[in-house]
Image (cartoon, rainbow, N blue to C red; front, side, top):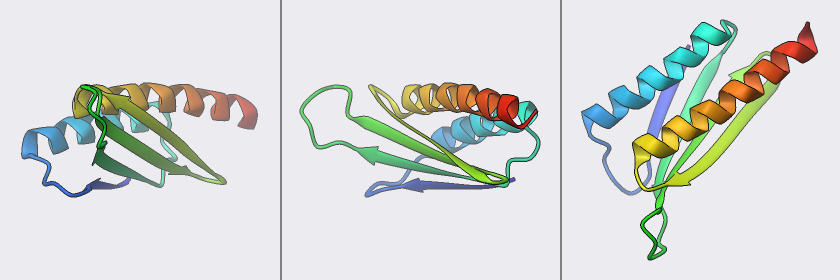
Length: 97
């Protein structure tokens, strides 16, 4: 699976990149036909503490799954997005079977 992690207007440290890669790779255990994944990390300009945004796009044959989560940390946002994608993948698998 091809994985791209894009940090918008900042540089993500290696620990964050490894954490996200590990989470995304777990999706492949659930569904082995994932073609590629893209992760966008952004900082929201709002004054709230929950200003970290993770957007995850997963390409599967015939479909594109997407999740966007906003939390206090990028790790929490990425984890929430992956959980949402797990639900989407299981629904997509049910439809194809």
